[in-house]
Length: 74
Image 1: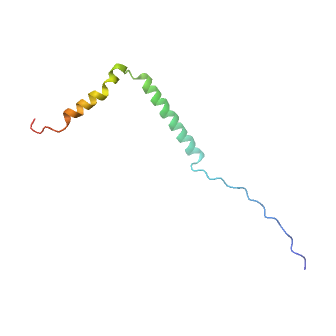
Image 2 (image 1 turned 90 degrees about the horizontal axis):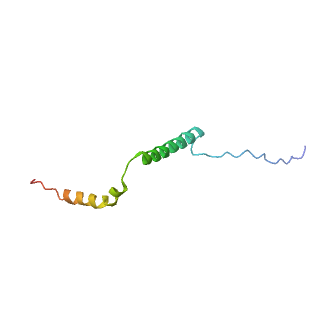
Image 3 (image 1 turned 90 degrees about the vertical axis):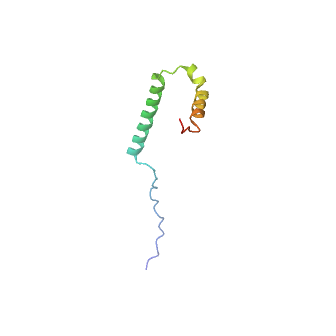
């Protein structure tokens, strides 16, 4: 009988887990870029006068104060 030969285990290549496939990551990144471009374009093309924004919170509060409580008799 021959003596047992000592063999070292061959290390298998480690598999790396990814949450999304390459296609899904590409589509998600494209969606994010398009969304940012749309937001930037909207902000640039909208014509808001800054002076109207200063008293907007007071006007909104006044509007809701007049809406509540509801006057059913009117």
